[in-house]
Length: 201
Image (cartoon, rainbow, N blue to C red):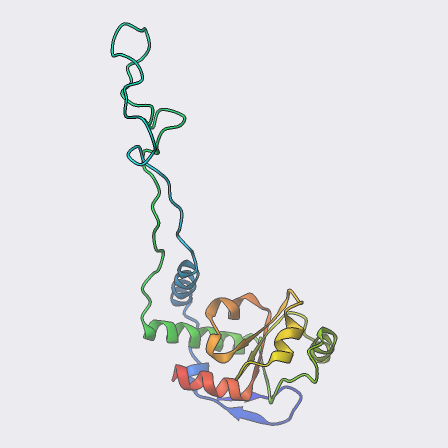
């Protein structure tokens, strides 16, 4: 399979196994759900009746007061009491093995290529960390919503993109399925594509 370089007449040969997969929506959904679930902190916590301070003495005697019987002021029925089913810190992580993750990434990248959302460039650099320069570069490519994927961290591109809500930069080792889906276009260098291909094949 060949991918055309943006703004050039040449093409790059890529592996069909990594970039010509069928779209597997259930697999992509499962991997995306697992990725987002792993990002949840899961630190919610509440106190049950045994953890709430006080309540050791019976509020009033059992009989003769005309009030409902009560054994502790920390009962879940009371306003200051504990919760009946108190929340506990938990992990939301879901198991996704390596083969599934690679398959989902390959299927997702293949679909981006079919939809002409993956734009391949020889290199992507800026002379200075200026947002204006990055916007001008993207306007030349007729893009305003893009994820820029580079082989290695580029400080100029990162500093120029962090002030734009619809533009982000990631090095290829940090690419994830949620980021690929979030943006309208994915601008990727040839070197980053090769690194990604090595991981997926």
